[in-house]
Image (cartoon, rainbow, N blue to C red):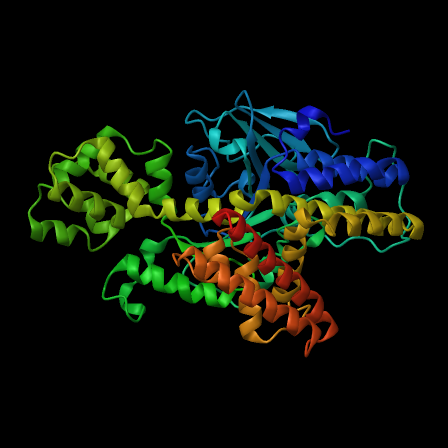
Length: 525
């Protein structure tokens, strides 16, 4: 049962409404469905769960370490990189192996504080890893590191699907063992399992099947597909892009990465809200304590080399590490492992521009160059700012799936009616809007392109100016435009729209009308 203490941890009023719905329905449904509702309640009171997904060797674990601010996820290929690892907040740092039979085993950290890459256990019996960290970032965000797509063994695929809810549900009426009140059967577990949002990592080569991979890595519970509400992508290893290969880059690596990210966004939309360039390796080193004062001293020495020699050393990693100079080879190898040539060049340029730069200021300069701030900004705008809506929509999808899996028409109808009553309330309109957005972006409802773009804009932004496509415009212009569009969508819903389009149009009309009301209240008129 959801207690008053749990209610305090709910993401917002929408999550609270869905939690109340679950509590009211529990006495009216079967024991199996009630057990599913209890799991939904537990998930509603937990932080937003974001899965980091992508192809093998795309740098997912490096990015996870950067986001958490601690080098803990193994980045070299080993047994642990074939497992799903959940990083969540805890009062004591610990890592647990979770076995398929439900038993757990505490795992010791390696000397450097990382999770061991290899396990001294029967790997085939392991379900996943749970890492609990005293880390402020994880207070409102659980980060799920997943095995790389593309070159996975079947066992890793199965583990990932089970934990992220991508496995197909069993058909209604299919026989299965009856579970006790406190346990979920496989169908119910699949209906509730899964991350609520996804951060999809790509490198410069977006493959044709990345769209399919995003669909397979269902970002939300009950097999809700990834979309602009709950998915963003990052273009990792941006420093490896050859500027000459990107038209309009003017020979600048970061400009090339930004242009390529925009191109990839067009390829992956509407499955993702945006594609953000980042250099995960530099971000990890600068943010997780990997960059030390000794590294800064070594870079300071390199900054004093003759220009011609320095440029020669930067031609390749081999030349950089083998060229004779005062900085020991081992030190240069370590710098390469932490920053690669792009980061080393950036740091030396910064030191040449300001020889008095401290180690701390140099670390901050590297962090700025990594693009991590841009990723965090989008995480805040797309995920954190809308965590309440994302979690509530995912929970409602789970509730629907649980009722559907029950096989009891009466129970299914009771749940359906309760959800309709909830969605009819003005405060729950955001859930209607998220549903409409998902219908349009998934292609379930066919809309003219210009109207689909408008639905996407209104439904996938939290800021009113961005919702209206008029960011920075005067208050009276925003208000007039919101009212005008509300009237247009109401007319479209009544004249010329198909029945499916009409349902979406009514939702968008209501969204604009509520925006107009909000603007009117703010102006006091």
